[in-house]
Image (tube, rainbow, N blue to C red; front, top):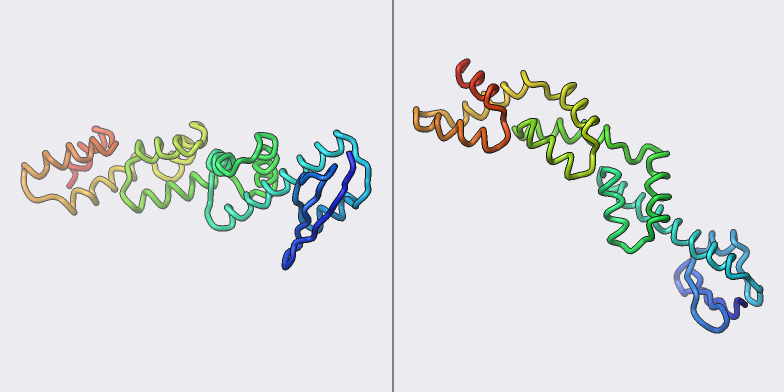
Length: 197
């Protein structure tokens, strides 16, 4: 395999590389010089695979870091977004691993933030639990975070806040019980909150 042509893109630091007369890949200037790519250079198929895998992994990491600079994500959410972008499993694995290494992705921190935020929005423990499960956070992490930040006693307080907002008559109380139960609050906590208000 022979690198037959290299085209530097105008107004960009990217290079299009052609092998045996056909377009092969694009890379940034740093990668271009680091890999020692030059016109007329003979490369093996192993070198070619290495170049392509290296470039894809770097692009996946860069994309992951851009995503994480805008929004906190779980490992699963990050991997899913990278998969949607078309990156290979290997590149995704490397990107997620690097993000974890830098502590840009931390499911426990994500869970803490999420629980705090949703508790303020008057979510039930159960609803938060299932929302975090959907986002790929492990059960053990969810349970640990819920116990430390949002214990059952706090759920009773949240129920009281909801009751105060909606309380008017006996009929309203029954509707409220149903509302609270269907929104994931535990029946014992509902009873405690309603009996103590």
